[in-house]
Length: 581
Image (cartoon, rainbow, N blue to C red; front, side, top):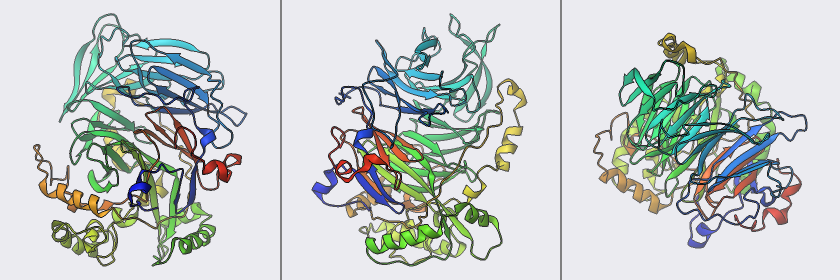
């Protein structure tokens, strides 16, 4: 549960872990890889990525997954926790020469049992549109590399659109394409549409409409990843220059920015209701940024190397009546308490509706997110209300923070209270693990901030304005709000050392763009487990499982508590699991 100490234990690869909601188990028979199951020699190759789509067919087995390993691309039926993977029969397999697939994305809007649109980005800059069910290759974009010669880092369909997609490159440019248009036989000429701080957007200047429709130049260095907000109106981009930049996509306006503690930012994701953004990168931290307040509200330290993926878990949201219960005792005692609590919390919806009522016992909401990194570890984190909405009287605790942190106390000492301005308890409490979100209850309602921003500037670009998207978040809620774990004293000391010695050439450290370590709450992971031999490159939360993948080309399925079927017999769950564990 908490980070475990000890040499041998730390190096063991875990096949299960426990959180408040119960036991997660690795399902060795639900592992996907190349048909021969041979570990891929990953030196110098692009990260393994995984994309899912549900074909909405009547069989109840509509999930499909696509993944790239080296020069190869595979498309399988994904059976999840229900049945063992059959690797001998990929629906489609492609091997590329001279270039490697780097990323891919399904169009969920147009997917049917007979046809699916899959975009694939490549290391040489091209983007291919394929249908792995019909086994067709319909189009190749940037074929002559006249638009951009650099590696494709991220490709995504524009939410709510059947034809628009966005492509980011390691050149720092992003391009908006329409699948119906051609790319032209000469290099495109551009005309400035909008310019702002560290970004510029150009339209393609030509007699007939051609791709790209737009060219975005964002920051300096590679644009590593982007993510659309749940309502599709905003776009969060993270770059090698260490900046998160959030844009209003339709009006092409910059909404806000944030700077990493140091190094590039590698990954980004939105909370299910669009109120928070989490980033990860080369500072080994996860950073939580408030979309509404445009500021860093917490950082999380648990990884020992670069963070490669961050993702929210929309299915694990805990709802707790705010009568905080002190608890001290063994884990077994706590598990018993949990079962009792879970029985009481079966009607999450009604409790969420209390969130905005005048009830004397308000309901608090906790969000779960996860991260995986090059240290081969999976971390799970919570966002809780003590961090998101610190009470006024607690501001005094923050004044003690700097003094305590300056002395670099060992973990577990009073100095750790530094990171929990949200806790109303005296210093000896551990750092808080969670950042809550009162806004989950409002998922589906649109923020006035968003609507106001979009109103300006949409007319300039009306041809690309997007349809209203339906909210698709059916959040399944589990009761959990207890935070756990201490960072080992070594990592704690190291972190404090970094705080004191780091100087930022851009002079952003200590400003709202990049607050000092002691100025924002520091989260600890609920769990931090080594789950692979090679660096981790995928983390996806599905309803009944969590999917991870490592650079050796193994895609692992972790059954959620209570969701594991016939595959979860004890001998299988605890077996070494072949090549992965």
